[in-house]
Length: 250
Length: 250
DNA sequence: TACATGTATAAACGTTCATTCACATCGAGA
DNA sequence: TCTCGATGTGAATGAACGTTTATACATGTA
View (cartoon, rainbow over the protein chains, first blue to last red):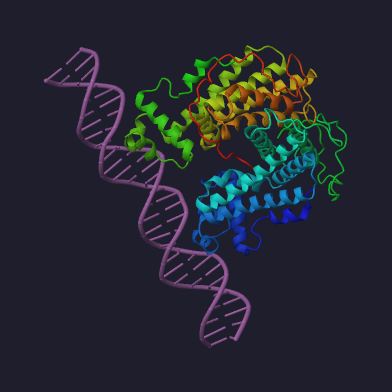
């Protein structure tokens, strides 16, 4: 499990920033989320903070610099959390893939707005700023490819199409895209609780790679309880009542 | 199977348009694909055709009207092809899901550029034009949800999380996103042939819904040859040797 | 009191954008 | 030959953009 406070606080954005800078980041995040970064003007951002356009340049060198702050922060955060989770989880490929999917779903759904901004707006960056974000994204993908390749080599995974690099990449990218897109129609407080959500996505991911059951995780999961696994007992109580009745959409 | 000529010709875009209009559509498609619609100027579009900006307005009422032409055409086309395929395929849910996935992969990968423009730029539309495209997209998704729900009701599918609307939607959207994102790192002439590609995606889709084997399709497919089916022998020659693009990660 | 610092302002800058419009060109039909 | 419709030109328009600049106003400190 993700140690709740660590990334949650950081995901508020603009740590170590002055108060006006943080307010500008927050306003920009809202506007970028609703309209897209390209369609959002400096005047809108500063206006939302009760400021005039010039004020932005006391805190950021440019509009792109502000976007970079938001985007790269989220990417570094995700990268860090994934690494931390993977170093604490052991060698079993099923465990490792499970951990990655759990983290991805939790981070993306929890910080839905910020994640969508990061994933949709990063191509608006240019030059070295873009290169840095792309490098992080590639690293994230390669890490999953390594897990899949290892699992396939051990006979634990059955990747559709074999273990060639192309097939492994298809599977890895599919799994990550799936998790990222969870934010598109699901949100905290929605019809599904976070553990339920994670369970579904873990199950789908394991199915995609054709994972053979290991400890207690059937490829066709029983509806029983999840695994005990990591220590942090944070799934004790449902943080929302969110009656998981069948109906609701997204 | 997709009757090759039908949609392929139509996907060239701008059917029934005058020659300059078609050239403008083609140039805009290229530019939108490379830079995004918002970042592409009317001057660039007309300049690419050896024209001046004003000339565009002899053929389209606005830049958005041109984008609409491109985007709605691709959506209607996909919708039509899916409907045609589904009406000719019988009632078996496995067959129906297989058909949808095959069509999606083929259309998106074959018309990679146009598909990416349609899927990435449609949010730039406004008002009724946007509403029309959104309606088509919803229809496409609902159609897959119906297939999954029917399959689950017949006990042929085992949707992760049960047969509630939310779970079915998660699975349906995941499958469609997966197919759409095939264009992000795969292309005709890439390391995988079209039938291979379709096979992988069909297999992953069936795994996601936990399909139980029916005619000859194991949930863990043997690596042997695919089903006979796919008629059009169109992947004969490799048109490019381009490298597989880096692909989206988290 | 004097000064430095952080922050905000109002106005303007230069650029770029989509769009408009009066006018030219040209092929086809009468 | 004349007209007409389709098409293209090239200049102009008004608006919007990101950004810069000179200036002002607090606040804390020496």
